Image 1 (cartoon, rainbow, N blue to C red):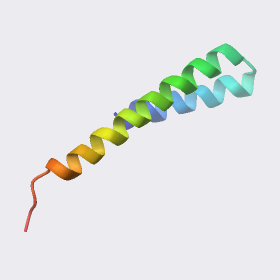
Image 2: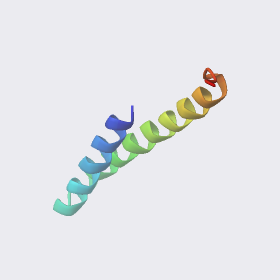
Image 3: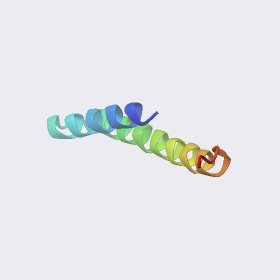
Length: 53
């Protein structure tokens, strides 16, 4: 999941450099959504994960 987030952030940065506003905005919004999904899954895994000794 983090790999997808990083991919879309890099795509958004490249699109912004070349000046394609629509592509940059779309990629940035996708990256933002994926980031929050990853963050929620990470927090859930912290609470439900098995504890090791």
